[in-house]
Amino acid sequence: MSDTMLKAVNSRHPVMILPEKYEVFDLSETYDPDLIEKFIISGKRAVGGYLENRKNMYLAPQYQNKRNVHMGIDFWAPAGEPVYAAFTGEVVYTRNNAETGNYGPTIVLRQIAGEMEMFALYGHLSVDSLTQSSVGQKVNPGDIIGWLGNYDENGKWPPHLHYQVSFEDPGEADMPGVVSPDDVKKAAKLYPDPRIFIGDIY
Image (cartoon, rainbow, N blue to C red):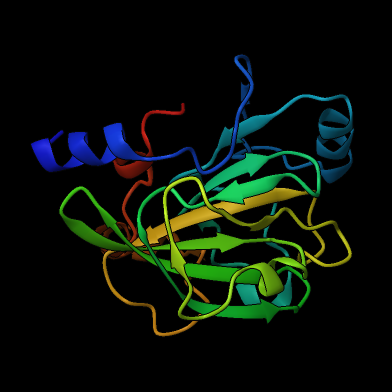
């Protein structure tokens, strides 16, 4: 890891507060939303997902049964839990991507991590999050950006945060959260592993 990235990781605030013990989900073979809901309700937490090929998860029509490689990290936790700015920056885009299977309420921050500019997408939030964070608002590490949304408002998913980073300005409150296997090499250059910024959480 470069000195710039080490500086970023050492100076950041957690995107979500995790307990001392949490699990790492591997959804490459099985996705069972009911089991995930029960897991969350039991008080447990989980993370995972970058470059995971999730063959049985993205069944909504917009994925065309082709896009299934995950370009972000998921934080699985109950609806209502807060999410935080990791670095200094500002809110640049907000939108409710309300289509089933989409992100639901979504916020994108432009942030400076170490000496590097990057854009961070927070997806599957609550509708109230779009009031909490408005375009042009400045943020500092540890500021609450919003809260996890419930099934009815987050795109019809078990509660979780989709956290994705981009080296380029996406121009809107959206990024391709999953891509086809043929596009992974190109996509990974634009949407790197978030752990280079937020640390080795798994």
